[in-house]
Amino acid sequence: MIKITKPVLLPFWWQDLLVAIPRIVCGYLLTVHFGADKFGLPWSPADKNLGLFEIAFWFPGDVANYGGIFKMFPDFFAWMAGFSEAVGGIFLLLGFQTRIASFLILATMLGAIFLQQINEGMWNTLPALGFLWVSLYTLTLGSGRFGIDYLISRKKTDEKK
Amino acid sequence: MKKNRILIILLSFLAFSNCVQKSSKKTVILKLNVQGIKNIESVGIRGNEKPLSWDYDLELKPIIKDTLYTATFSIITGYKFTEAKFTVNNQFELNDKNNRRILFSENDTTVYEAIFNIEN
Image 1 (spheres, rainbow over the protein chains, first blue to last red):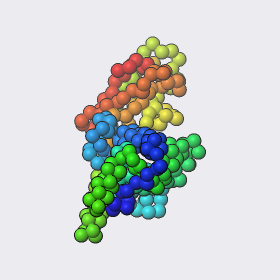
Image 2 (image 1 turned 90 degrees about the vertical axis):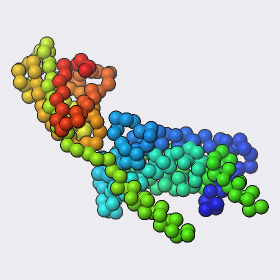
Image 3 (image 1 turned 135 degrees about the vertical axis):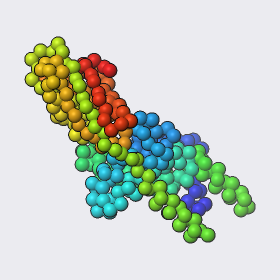
Image 4 (image 1 turned 90 degrees about the horizontal axis):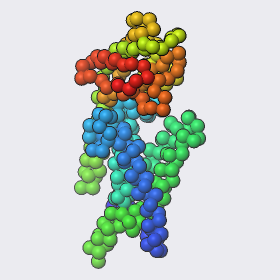
């Protein structure tokens, strides 16, 4: 587990700070805007009428339209996509289990781009592409110095010594 | 131990993944006052959710011609509201203003009364 958690550190702290900015912004946008609209969290808009950890009623129907395995398990895939954005977004923001969150977000964004948005034209793929690029480098680097993963991995390394 | 942990996580995901917001059928009865508007050829409503659309009207029929129009439609939704705007002769009301929010009553049927181009 420590291998997944331990971030790759860049040579200088300010480099870690620079790459943390898009990670934090994307995490915030995912959890507060994109995710919370369709996945129930305490900060989901009240008029969406979503219970905690509930996926919006319309989303499994959209997912089923992708066909194949998505049509067989629409509730599961819809819930996972909502969870990845809403909860994965918080994890990304905090730099907590960054690689796991990044993997979930990456998979969700690939689905959003190639199964949904690309049918509406390239412009519509831009938000999901943005999240995809960020999740790619956070999957590789982890949280860097500015995240909870750094504190956890440093503590575990100290304990081993 | 590690296998058990993974199994518990997987089972939790499967259990949670059944958490889909409950939806129900909501019927809306619209009553629109268009008094004062001349040469009315069509009255309609456009909105977010089927059978409403932003591309075409759901037609309102006259109760009293050139004065009071009505339509009834049903939506299957989990939300407490739907967004819409009325049209007269295919021209939207409330230009540059927010959409109307039709709040559903706790009962199955909601009666929504409005005056064209005036916010409730």
